[in-house]
Length: 85
Image 1 (cartoon, rainbow, N blue to C red):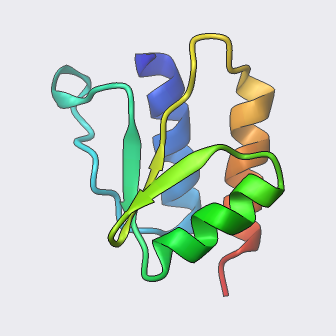
Image 2: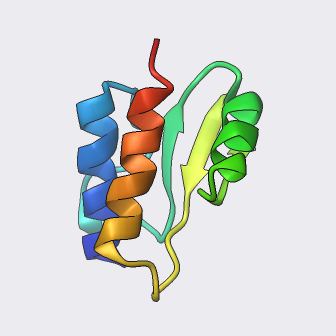
C-alpha cells in the first residue's frame, strides 16, 4: 500500500492540492487525503466517473485496495486534475 499511496501523493502534488496525509511512509496509513473545499461534491463527481473516494469535511480521501492497478491510480489522478479550475 505504501507504493500505491506514494503514487497518489505524486498525483496530488501534480494537481497542486494541499496534502493532509504525512509524506513519511512510516507515518502514513492506507489512505491519502487532500484538502479541498466542496470535497463532498467532488467525491460525488469522481464516483460518477468510477473513482471511489470519500469525503470528510474538507478532506477528500483516496484509499486504494490491494488489487488497484497503477493504471487505475493514474486514471483517478488524471480525473482529479481535470476537476482543477
